[in-house]
Length: 156
Image: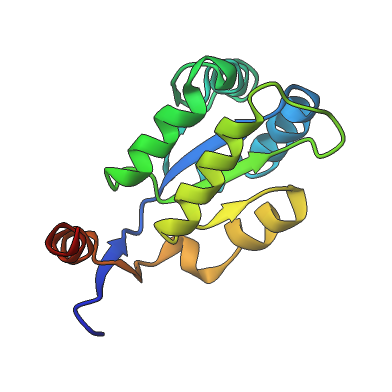
């Protein structure tokens, strides 16, 4: 790999963010219950209401951040930038307008920038959580932001 990129390693134990729009919360809770054995081996976090509901209904410990419309999506995005989120399961509702849609788009964008796996529905979540990579380390390459910032500061 060139110095344009740096390699980060996602460990065997993943930090998984669990997020769901209101219309999909029960689907995510059911999915968590179905995959409780796998999820229990990882660190779980999520936006406020979703995290609380998952913990209450499945017994899985989920660290809660703020509710999505109150900045929770942005908190998860910040954790991605800090290297503290490895994987996102976000059951979004494509048929209902969301007042905090710009926050959701920002979260999706930062997950893409940092090459973070993101499942957006049950099928993609099933494929990803049952992948052999869930129990292994995984190296992924991201833009070398330090080099990028240095070069930009020299040209502006």
